[in-house]
Image (cartoon, rainbow, N blue to C red; front, side):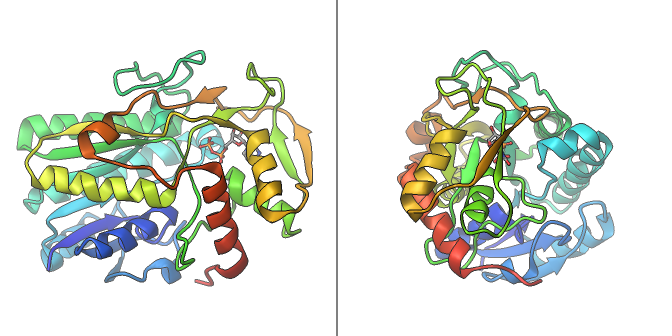
Length: 327
Ligand code: UDP
């Protein structure tokens, strides 16, 4: 039985990754402090509650399972919060990750898959972003992820730690079986907020700015179906197992959609109006974030076949109507 330690495995992306890992024949061991994750989302392997700051607990979990690799999702991930509380982002995302990386090396677990973000690139004036685009993060979220990328490089030089770093664009959709799905408290992400507004679970959506330099004035993002995204992680693990060395991959499809396009598609999938109002820009938002790279497809063989707006919103709506977590 090959154990994979999945930090943040009780969260949105981590829980979908556990399902994919199990399907690929691995046993995902979830390590999560349940601050933003859900115990009900841990369905595909053992659960170990713990914090990244707790080195003794991490050492205990590494000793118990002797994982072949770490897939590290656990992080704070809200741009707005990162602007107002940067210290939490540096402490949790960087300090916590350093602790985890040190524990992993100490346990002799030298294969590491890391969730990074396109927010490490910052604003680049409508240029598509590839893995060599200079990284100038605009907020503490992007900066904290960038710092962990640097730690991984230093630990490779010193201790031979091999990493696959995925820079995510925007993740959306849900498991089509609705076993797991997107559920944040508070919710800040566009697709679940649109669906909540549609069925009256919350007030109208506020569109954060319509004066951006884009065709309809709203921000453009590159949305990837969460099931496609986590498939890349399984391929990343195989990449490391095949001894192909450390590598950075963007996970985006190259298709950008505006906030208005997401709202229009949601109306068409659900056949209901999206109540909305227009508000000011949100601090820390870039005009456009779209991947200009096919590296993951060419080198990993990644096929983001479910990342159309139609399928993502359909699957998110399916989960929205049937699933939620209590604990
Ligand atoms: N957005 C919005 N209203 C909301 C939440 C998000 O207009 O209530 C916009 C946001 O400005 C961005 C896009 O939707 O352009 C995606 O935001 P989200 O928070 O989902 O992801 P992010 O791009 O911040 O990672």
